[in-house]
Image (cartoon, rainbow, N blue to C red; front, top):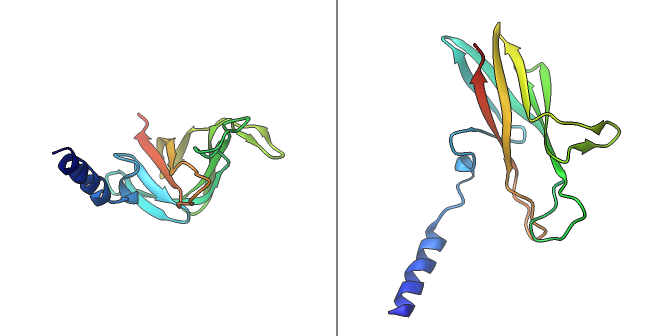
Length: 140
């Protein structure tokens, strides 16, 4: 009976797919150089594209002196580039940076973009393409 239980647990774990499109849950999911068009209000739309993901976080299987940070640059409607950061946020030649939330205007509508997470967390053994998870909120 014990072996049968282990067999089903193993089968369940193996059958779970690595669905990278669902890493962000209900948040907007964007990979590097991927763009998506979102509806703002009515017929208004905004095109969002991740143009940089620089992940300097300490890999989960390594002991580090500092936790590190991850930088994400998001282009809005092919012109404005917003710079986001999670973690220690010390960028070379720029000093301390803190911007996980940015309010911007698109088509006369203010909205707030929040970088909620960047998946997958780095590992020294494998390299998976990172996915940035954004929350998009309309401002009243």
